[in-house]
Image (cartoon, helix red, strand yellow):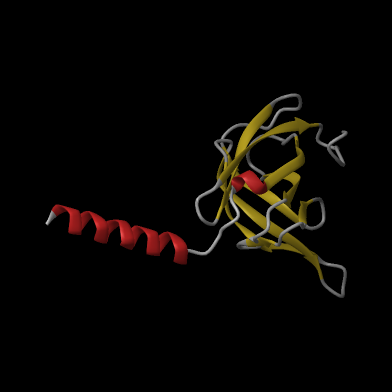
Length: 154
């Protein structure tokens, strides 16, 4: 009985592994140029920017961001209407095709850090975890630049 049971389990496991779609993992993600602006206290949201590149052969989807510095971190999109009025809305999941780069930058997609747990002080840094579909995670060290910074170089 035992050998039959083991071979059936082995066949089932082999079948499951062969039929599962290939997923790009966190090892295929490169994050460059991460930075934040200093905050004025904690009453207003903070923000983080970076580029996220998929070097793999399969698409990846950024599903969540986490950081201890904010209770409600989300990816937001800034858009401007015909009258020149800008607004921000949650962007939801971000799909990154193979070989493509998504920029989180001023005026576009960005990490909105709502309900800050402490002020974001120039010269400090914090960790942010990018979570991808399939469970892969990338942890990024995000330096905090001056309140008027316009890019990772300050």
